Length: 318
Picture (cartoon, rainbow, N blue to C red):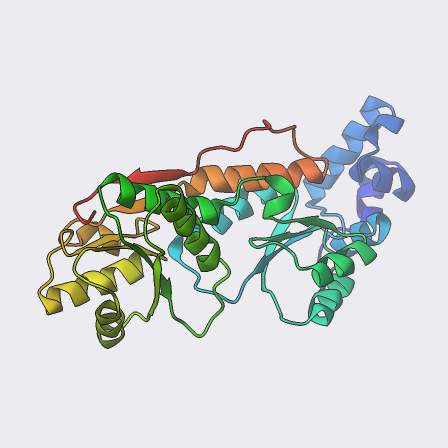
């Protein structure tokens, strides 16, 4: 049977009110020896304050909800959330992953039921979502609220610059075609388009690729080859196009140049070696948690400049 606050009070020889205040952050109101007795008794009895009780007193729970877009969920994101889970737990918070719904009413019901301390999103909140979060008075953290840098657009720019610097004059962007949403690809496409305009290149071509050889062949055939350079949504798309190029007898990178994104495990065995971009998950997770904790009042102020999370990994496909 779990120990109660009454058990702790009896063991420490103090009142339940004293136990409640000491264990809920007001130990400074009491003599040091009194607070020490309460902490020692709670430890000895294995007492844990009620999460429901804390939520009632504070108006929020210890949950931090991370909203995941209905999109491809790669290993990088899994690593990011694993690290965030551990770090938030060290500060007394529990990270809960939840798929974002299309209706704001779904978000509203979730907040009403869970009373989260904060809601974190990988993509910018919509105006409707912001209205719900503001009305519920819930701390909301999304990319625009923590950084002026659009990392997806920066990915497209980095891909474009790598291709342009290698001498390619005709660029294309390859989206991942999937039943799920693509909240990241269009910003990457725009980043590539920015580079094409800045370097006075031709208007970029755009294709959609399923992770399927027939789809990759059809997409490749739709491009004006030879002499096209393709920035891919991720390494899976890049690998599919490399396979299609091999089937069509096209030389990489002379006829078709390819650059990926993610530096996935599979991409590391590509032949020829895939040029790609690596996202520093450890730094991104640390920055995300730091922003959350700072907003929650449990962290230290962060530097104004954003860390550099992106690194070009040079291979033989550009």
